[in-house]
Length: 224
Image (cartoon, rainbow, N blue to C red; front, side, top):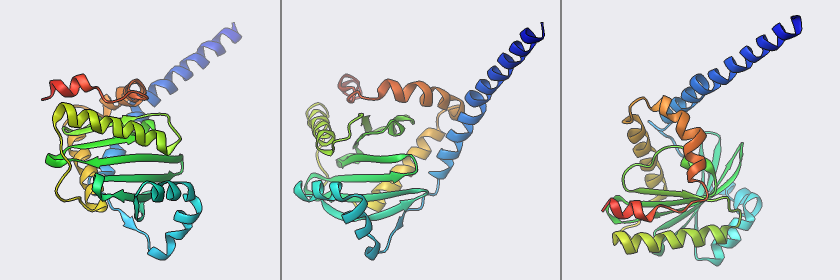
């Protein structure tokens, strides 16, 4: 009898922990993350510190960038993350390597005219929040930068074909584009009713369903 009572108490405790995780911790983390996007601060490291990243921690990415006509923009810090950025102005594309406490992640961002953007990343976190109108996001479990870029270029071709998108006449500065993107994400998520609770689905289901899948061209066509 005592063993059964202990088992039941243990199961009740476990259930309580799961419910707290789902309905307390995750909504709090979603709310906290969105609040940090309200007034984001991107800190550009002094140029003399860049070499530690460009020729050290991110040497492979630097070599790939140089080979593929991407030029160094700088090394930034946002919260606990270090973001190393290269750009190809003729393609209106940024290449980012993010060093965070949770790992190393890559992404390509292409800016189109009329406030359209395509992001191709290799981490699930890029897919947590619903994308604002005009932003297309895809993410793949790909470590090789070249393969990730190929997927990005394929999506660019699809978007130009079905939405007739064009590259902008003027390519924005990285800092301006990045901060504007965070503020836009903040405003859009805040407009979603009960967004901290909806975040339970986004975090546990939404980002996993969309991972390793290219942007839905059929949905893009319907948005025309």
